[in-house]
Amino acid sequence: MNKARIILLKSILIIAAPAIIEMSLNTMLMVADTIMVGQLIDKQALSAVGIANSIMFTMIFVFSSFNTGAIAMISRSFGEKNMPKAKDVAQTNLALNLIIGIAVALLAFLLKPILFMPYQIEPLVTSHLHIYYDIVVAGMLFQFLSFAFASISRGVGDTKTPMYITGFAVVTNIILNYVLIAGWSVFPEMGIAGAALATTIARIMSFSIYVFIIFGGRHKLSLSLKNIHLNRSILKPLWKISYPGAVEQFLMQTAFLVLGIIITTLSTDSEALFRILLNIESTSFMPAVGISIAAATLVGQSLGEKDPDKAYEIGLLSGYISVMWGVIIGIIFFVFPKSILGLFTPDQVIIQMGIVVMMVFAFNQPLLNFNIAMSGALRGAGDTSIVMRLTSMRLWLIFIPGTYLCVMVLKTGVVGLWYAEILSFLLFSFIMLKRFKSRKWAYIEL
Image (cartoon, rainbow, N blue to C red; front, side):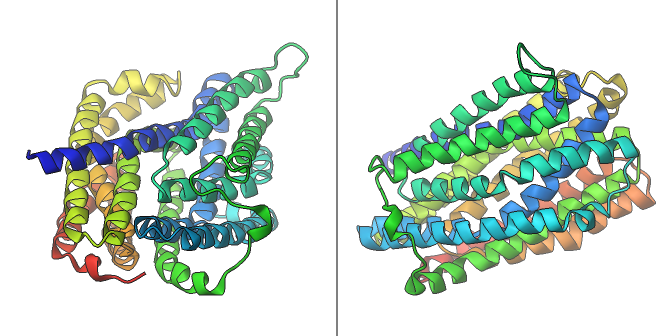
């Protein structure tokens, strides 16, 4: 590796390292509930938490997709040294997230019967689900705004601030889980309601810290509350870049809802295993998400500096690093499945069911991580439309039909889902790489 590439590699890792930690901690905020609910309550509560989180995050990820466009536009403006435009983008994106967050939270409450209808679950799971969902949705607006604040930081290359704030939220959530789920001192035992309340409080505290930093003049792109508004000249390009991301997230999250519905036709044990495995895999690819954030930021800044060759090298290096991580984590999954599953549940039936599945999805890790990193590089260039189309085709032409065939027709059980996912990622890794090497993304105007 020549000196220029070593410098680029360092640049990627400097931004990626805090982002990796932040993404891992962000997932831990959700995983903390899963582990503690599984250990301190029961598998029915575990299923309820998984279903509630899948519904809620579908709405959050779909409707907070303006953050994808905001990162691309802020990083490009930052690379051009155009700070007024970067601030305009940040302020417009915050205003959008405030409006959308309020609307989505209200809809989440009003449409609850419809959202729960597809799931074939036993009465105890339903009871837990209603309690957990109502409390967590109450804090949804703060999650929207925290994501918007984080996108501002990432756009200017500051991945440390989101990392520290997320770390604080995770510690807060874990402490409150112990206090509120089982009860402690003057605090009564609240069960699953305690887990939901702990998560909501942690999210409110994260939001409060972001407000203190970004509106208190303590950030590279400090803002003023009085200037938060919708700038029409920013809205059009922001929408153009962001709407493919919204469509992509809608199709992706809907796909996982469909997968969840397919799995609920099996058994409560299969449903609980499915939720555990999703949490394990989500945690495993957080480094790739961090690298994709670094790639998006650095590709955007490089294009702002009029250096597409540098952007190209950053994208390829990001993909290479992510594949290496996928190989390492895949080996760990293959060798230690029982120990990893034991962290999430003491139920030996679920653990035995999951061992083979983990050994299978170990082979998926390099492909999954590569796709995440390359998608980030393309998004940073503003090439969000092609990422949306490729992701949609992978999910709905191969992954979902393949899962249905394996689980419902061939009766493979939960493992069939990962057979289908491996096939889908194998095919589309080649397509994603071909698109990036074409360099068509280098000519997109923002």
